[in-house]
Image (cartoon, rainbow, N blue to C red; front, side, top):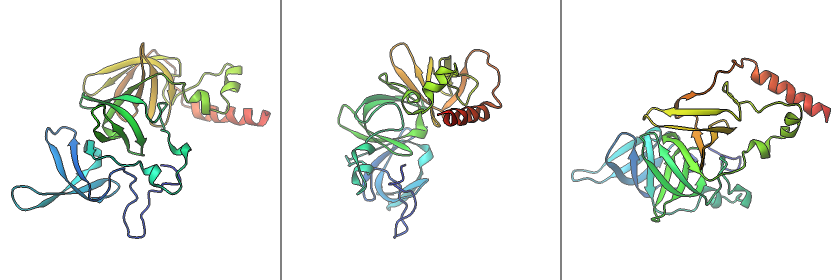
Length: 252
């Protein structure tokens, strides 16, 4: 989250969680590996869990739900967290991915299933989307394998201050892995599925691939392994990268 949307606690000791749904909201929670939905009213939201008040056939009870195990949360429509802030500006209406707010995406979950919708906002741990049927969901990033979307210019082409200088000296854009931007790779997931494409970009949390028809954003926390050509190890990659960046800056 940005500096305007802190994740500490408010004056009442409540966690500033920055989810679009609020306490008192009726929700339906889908957990990974579970068929049935958890239904109840949100009474507490903390950093790693939320608590639901549940009314069953017997006495009422509560469930404490681990956010890390949640696939998605279905709820009513809400204004995004950013738009609720007094510090909100139009520049806040963007994502940390290459795709934009309002764009249609296809989310592929770790269990092999998927969901399509239009991006309404993004938080540190979730994507808030609206489906074509008009349903609203908070999708947990930790439950995703990858996201399919239209083609976009790689962020390294737009926010890397020394990209042109790197090109001038014949320096290719590296990744934290042994392969680099421009290499062809295949990504395998625990559910048995795989996707393949040309590496276009990399961020701290994702790798961007170009397939024949669409772009694929692969979440780094979801893959089992990458298959690619043989490359030399890069034990000093970031040391040399940092030195080059310093040299290019000093030469300006």
